[in-house]
Length: 204
Image (cartoon, rainbow, N blue to C red; front, side, top):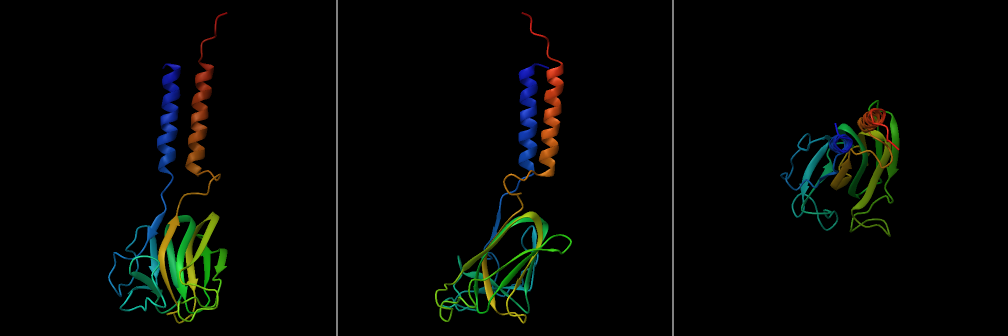
C-alpha cells in the first residue's frame, strides 16, 4: 500500500472513531411537556424522580418563580428530586428558584459522593428572596469522575424549588482521554510503526 494512502487510512480511522466517543451536551427546558406531567423517562439519557411540570401563569406564580426560558419548569414534588443518568456525565448545570436553601449532591455509579454544591442564599424568589438574590440561580458541577446521579434537596417534604433549563454533558473534560480513544491512538501508532519498518531504504 502506498505510504500516503496508509497515512490517510490511519487518519480517517482515528477521526471517525474518536468522534463516535464524544457527545454533545443535552439541554432540557420541559416546554414540550404538559402542565402537571410527572417527569420520569421522557428525555433520553436521564430519569427524573419526584419532578412535576408547572406552567407560568397557572400552576406557578411567574412573578415570584419566573421560568428561565419558555413557560414550563419542574418542582420537587413530594421530596428531594433525583436525576439518574444512563451513562456517566461529566458536567451538569441548572437554573433554580427556591424558597429554602438547596444542596446538590453528585454520586458515582457505586453511590459514592463525588461533590456537593449549595445555593448562595436561603431564598431567591423574586418577591421574598434574600437581599442581593435574584431568581434562576445557576448551580453546576464538573467532575473528572463520571457522575451517575444527582440529588437535589431543599425541603424534605418537597415544594421548595423550581428547576429550568437543565444541561448535562457525557463528554470527558478536555485533557482526559476516552478509553476508546486511547486504544485507537495505540492502534494508529502500531500501524505507523509497521509502515516505518516496511519502508524501502533510500539510495544515496
